[in-house]
Amino acid sequence: MKNKTFTYIILMLLIGIAGSSMNGYAQRAKKHREGILNIDSIRAQNAADSIALLDTLQLQRQRSYLLETAVDTAALIQESDSIQQQNLKVKEKKKWIPIPNNSIWFALAIPGAGQIYNHKYWKLPLVYGGFVGCVYALNWNGQMYKDYSQAYQDIMSDNPNNDSYLDFLPPGYTYEVVQGDLAYYQNLIRSRKDQYRRQRDLSIIAFIAVYLLSVVDAYVDAELSNFDISNDLSMTLEPTILNDSFRHRPQGIGLQCNIKF
Image (cartoon, rainbow, N blue to C red; front, top):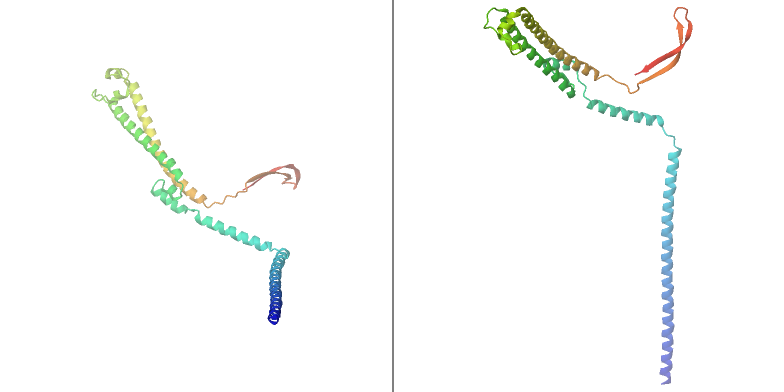
């Protein structure tokens, strides 16, 4: 019985010693693993830091290289000039440039067609307004001249039934009244007839003048569409020496006016 108890105690001691040794071994393995992980994390962190450092050093080198590299200003100016020229060419392509000969033929064929060809539509009311005014004046003066011509023929005749001239006199004037001062009324009717004839002729001249002006305007407008107007318009006053053209000597001091356009 005593031997069994002693044996049991020895087994328990051996089991305790083995358990403690196993716990120690597990703790040492755990610490070893943690150490390996810490080393790996440190190594990874160091690698990331080194990569970031290399990137920053490379960026700094590139910046310093760009700053130290000389800028080719001539090439930049040439490039900007070429871009501006391309933009100007595009604008010139979009701008309508009429042909003067075509504008003349259009204006001669149809009044106002030259202005339409030149894309100057705002001039059409002026052109057609002039034509309408001349046509109205021509019709009015032509009709009045025709009526007064007939009245003059009637007052110059001896037939009392031909009394159309009374329509142009104030109310109350009769054939007997007119016969009392026939020479005066004959001169009056003749002067009015001649007046309306002159106005009719002037209306025809004005119509032709408006027509010719529309043609000239279309031609001049087409010619000036290619005229280059500089934005640098200036006038300066500068002192100058007045020379004597005969003696070739300075005669005095004055001012000269320079106009730049």
